[in-house]
Length: 405
Ligand SMILES: C[S@@+](CC[C@H](N)C(=O)[O-])C[C@H]1O[C@@H](n2cnc3c(N)ncnc32)[C@H](O)[C@@H]1O
Image (cartoon, rainbow, N blue to C red; front, side):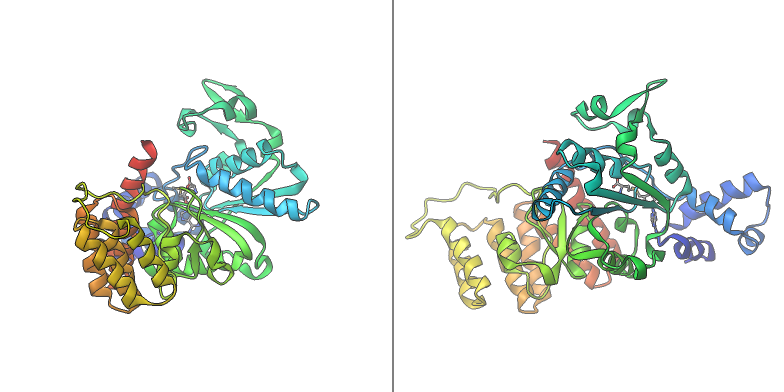
C-alpha cells in the first residue's frame, strides 16, 4: 500500500486501488498548483484532505433503491408503535449519500400513516458535499430510477429545469450530519437506534475495516432493533454477530443474541450454529437443471431435503447427510442437496468439504445466491480477498438480475 493509499484508508476506511488514489491526487495537485506528490502529502491540511476524499467516494444512490427494505422497515416500525403508540422510533441512515435513502425512509413511514412525532431519522455521510446536497433536498433525474414514481407526485414539487424539491414535511423528519462511521462515538448513542440502514458501504471496505464498522453499528443498534444492509454485505454481518431476518429481498438483519430461532428461515437454521449463513432473499425456489428421472422413491423426493434440514436442526448431522445422499441417489443433479451437504460439513468444521459441495451446487445451479455467499465467506476466512470479492460481485449480479425480472 502506498503512503497515499494509507492516508485515504485512514481517513475513510475505503480500500482504494493505487490508480484511483493517484488519479485523485493528481487532480487535487493540479487544482492547488502543487507540483510534487511528496510535498502535497506532507503538507496536506484537514481541509485539503476533505477535498481529496470527495474525489474517491462513490455517492451513488436513488429513491426507493431496493424497495423491499423500506416495506420491511415500515412493518417493523408499525409493530413497535402498536406495542407503544406514544414512543419515538429512532432511525439511522449511514451512509446517506445525497439523502435519497433517509428521505425514502421518511416517505415510506409517512405514507404508512406514521405521524411525524413518532419517528426521527439521523443521516450521516462522510462527504460534506453529499450532506449539503441532502439538506438542499433538490434532485435531478438520476435520483428517480424507481419504476413507480408516484412518490414524486406526493412528496416533491418542481424546482425548475426538470429538478424536484422534497416537501418540508418529509425534510423535517431527517437530521443530516457529516460524519465518518468509523469515528462515530457510540458512547453517548449506545443502543440508540431502533432501525439502522447501512447499505452499500461495507463493500468498499477491507476485512478488518468491515469488522470495525460492524462493531460500531452493533453498538448503535438497540438489542431488539433491525438493520438493513446491501445485498452483498449480508455475509459480512453474519460473520460478525448478526443473523438474517426472513424478509424477502430486504436484507434485514438482527443481533444474533436476540434472534429467536423460530423466526429464522429454514435454511438459515440448518447452519446457524457455528457460522450463520446469509439469507437468500433473492434466490428463486431451488431448481434442478435436469428433469428428475422417474423416481422409485417411497417418499416424495422433496421430503428428503426437508427431512435433512429437520435432522440437521436437531443436531443429527449423520442422519441429515444420509437423507441428502438418498435424495441425490434419485436426483443426481439436485443443487439444493449439495448446498445442504455443504452446510452440514461447515457445521462439522470441514470447510474444504463444504467448499467442494457448494462448488458442485453452483456448477449445477449457477445462480444459487446463498451458495455463492457461503463460498465468499470461506474465501474471506482463507484471506483470499480477491476471490471473496469476485464471489460477492457474482452474487450481487445474480440478485440484480433476479430483481429486474
Ligand atoms: C454508494 S453510497 C451509499 C448510499 C446509500 N446508503 C445507498 O445505498 O443508496 C456510499 C456513500 O458512502 C459514503 N462513505 C464512504 N466512506 C464513509 C465512511 N467511512 N463513513 C460514512 N460515509 C462514508 C460516501 O461518501 C458515499 O456517499
